[in-house]
Amino acid sequence: MKEKKQNRHVYWNPYFGGFLFGILILLTFFITGRGIGASGAMKSSVVAITDVITHDHAESNAYYSKFLKEDKSPLNSWLVLEAIGVLIGAFISGGLTGRIGWRTQHSPKITRKRRLIFALGGGILFGLGAQIARGCTSGAALSGLAVLSTGGFITMISIFGTGFLVAYFFRKNWI
Amino acid sequence: MGPLIPNGIIPFEWNNIIAIIIGIAFGFILESSGFSSSRKLAGVFYGYDFAVLKVFFTAALVSSIGLLYMDYLGYVEMGNLYIHPTYLWAAIIGGAIMGVGFVSAGFCPGTSLCAVAIGKIDAIVYVVGIMIGIVIFAELYEVFKPLYEGFAYGALTLDETFGISPYMFVFIFTIIAIVAFVIGDIVRKRTKKVFY
Image (tube, each protein chain N blue to C red):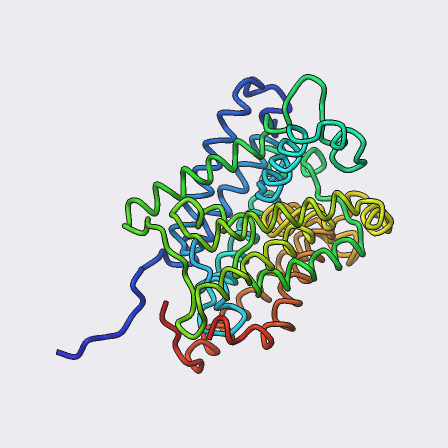
């Protein structure tokens, strides 16, 4: 019998996933009046950590101080709770399909170390970019598009457009 | 009628519980669609997997068509929703920086959280990177401030920008998406398969 080569994991049909995702964003807007987000929770975490380490610095910094409130922790926010939910939801999905495990996923052509360095560098860029654009792929691009925001649309074009432009230089990492 | 919580139809105390429930659904859908895998995500840039394109555009269209219908039927008023504000150059430059980060790391923040949840070490490193990036922005805030706060157009929407009705815009966008899906499938068939 000829064995058909295929990927180890089988995922949902992308149109099915996208449809459910769209319904979820729709529901989120209908219930809360706002969209979803991901980088916002990380920003809140950074603000909270900075506040614990050097309270004075967090107060004097023009950016951190925007998110500091006298009576409540920056972690007490909608987006942080939502991010905790994301971790739980992904854990359930991964658990049901046997995808949980400590591993570093990388192309066989590159070393683990190289993968981690590029992941860190990419993270730094994404963190910086998401602050400048006031949101990431979820918060700015996707939730923006749902309400036809011009800013969200520009951010989406810019993310994917730049991605295609620079993809050539990173090809060794992926293909 | 909607949005339900700001209008007091669902008591405000439910806000946090709903946040977690929406998060769980968000994480479950992303992980099940394969977005916890950086190699699957990066496929869109090299033509061997178009899941990102398909999931992203389908979700954007379903939510925007849905919101326009709900607005039309009077369940929710578009004007009462939070519209991501437009800061022209911040959106362009921020997006470009994110684009390089996306190809370099193969994750965006939401998908990296899914990958962290199933134990991907590269995703944990990536999230640490994001936090460093945020610290860099906060420390250099004065440098970025003109870009961050300049070129502000407020809650600008695409129908105003292009001067067409929102229905027409979504219709054109749907056609573009369908063409993109077809092209994606053609490209993928011609690209060397990548297994991960």
